[in-house]
Length: 97
Image 1 (spheres, rainbow, N blue to C red):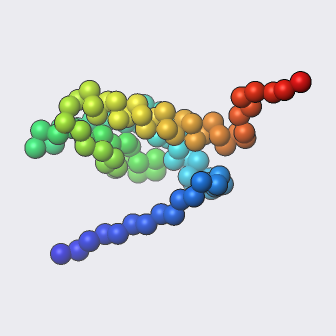
Image 2: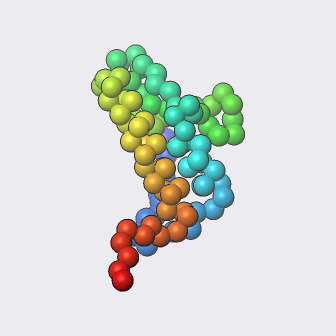
């Protein structure tokens, strides 16, 4: 039996993503690049279209309901949209005089 292990390191300090990462974030921030498929066990799987390979879909989450799957997609889009927004620099929320 073969297991695939993937690790990533995260920190609370801002990291500067490379252009490939920004390209992926832009891609998955668009709902037209997502789809929902129903699996044989009845669950719904969310997938996004691979940005470079036309016929390849990348699975992301599995949910029990179609509404849950669509909510997961909307949450992912919101998450990546926020990441893209913060690439523009700090967001000023209040100034003092």
